[in-house]
Image (tube, rainbow, N blue to C red):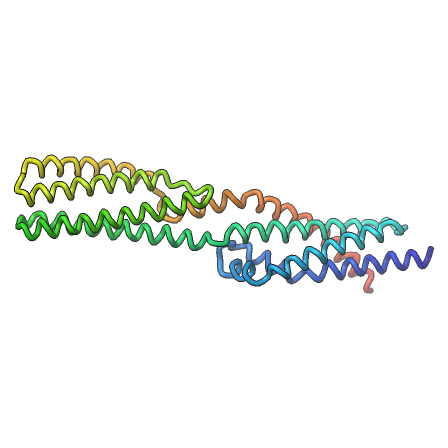
Amino acid sequence: DTMRYQRNTQQLEQAAEQLASTDELLATLDEALTDPLGDDAAAFYAERRDEVEQGVTALEAAERTASDAMQGLRESREKEVADSLMSASSSRVTMLEQGWAILEAGDGVADDYQAFEDAWAQVLEADELARESAELISAGSQDAIAESKQKSQEALDALTAARSTMDSIAQATEGIEVEAQLAYLDKRIEALGYAIASDAALEARDTGEAQVQNDAYTAAEQEAAALAEALPEDPGQPVLDAFQKKIADNIESYDSARGQASTSDAILRDYLGASSK
């Protein structure tokens, strides 16, 4: 019995060592997850897949070792330690798996976010082109009208490109909601169509048709201004919102496992500290 007891206590120490072998990995993961779209998170995801798999293997071995030891332990204190080792191992496995899932979900999100930001830069470019187009009309010459129409066309192309970018990303990525953005851009595109038609009428010296088209342009721009009220302050917000929604359950599981692991670790620190004295 004494030999069995010694073997069981040695198994506890072995399990504790297997558990401790994942300390640095988990600490680095935990730090990376403070900003799952940051550089540290991207580096962890790119470089440490094998270590995560090895960590899971080590923790599963620690849990088995502690479970085997539990069978022959006599002292309630040591049984508590074995139980804590099993709990800590299981919790750490959950942390690695859920943490990795969060990083995996974040892969590519920064690119999509930047694409939305770039698309909105095209919208701002279109705004400037539309203003320049309106200023040229006041000059009244045929050359100015032709240049005005060209700038309106360039503005329309910029808005169309921005719309295409946002829509294609939203179609490819579940959860990105761009209904408000598309409604706004569609109305702006419609308005510029009227502006181009008005310029074309002026080129043909049909001032009556030009006025009709200009009135339609003004009305559409007013509708667009109302639709703009629903737009987020940050153009890339739909990408971030979709990401947060996607990882919500993973974060909850990770945080729960993190709390359980912390509780178990505290018991283990007390035991290991006492047994080393």
